[in-house]
Length: 279
Image (cartoon, rainbow, N blue to C red; front, side, top):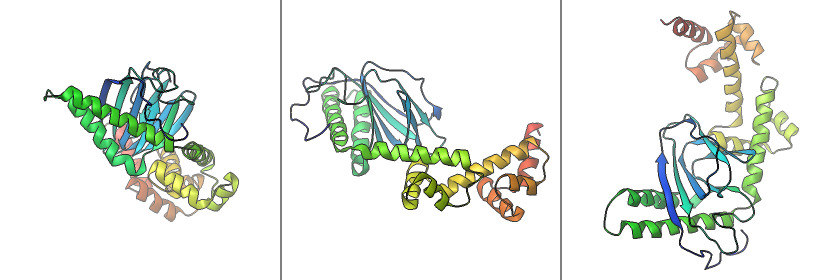
């Protein structure tokens, strides 16, 4: 949506169809489907990804997912502490110059970084849900006004959004794919940046924002998980496992392994066999 929002953007009064908070689930929290109504999903804390149409987009705390009615989607939450999303379905939606039950005129889905608006949006959404769950006087009227405020906040954020968010997601996904496919060969971030034609500081920004840690940590985690597979499925000595996972120095490999897993490689293999044997 370009330009300023029209004062009469709402052609009729929107209606809240459902709203709630998910702060327990991890993994895929729903099957891929499309609702007839428009939806808003606010990432209060944690991180994950959304499949919308044929594309996948990572999200993190403070992101707002704006979804048109009819857009097939599903969400995945990573196993992070304090993860929470707030969601709301909006019906009876008629916007100036747009098809019924559409929040977005030129696309089916939009991911917006709410930045300084994050706290306010979370407050309004939480209050909206609270008003729908109690029987206080005028609760329906309060909920109606809160829904309108949440909706207008979302439209403001969408109007501020540009191609930056989309390009940022593409940049992260391209970098992640490169790390996933070449993690055993990478010897420096400079080489990665050269291959991807990306600035090293921008690469660090993308990974820190999307995963919560820098690219070097992501690389180490990939290598250590690869090492775990060898330790679990073979009797190969630790030094050889380290070499296969990109560590020529066995002492350094053991230090990095313990830093990630909390135990040495030998101890990890011992504990895995105990657990496997039910001891």
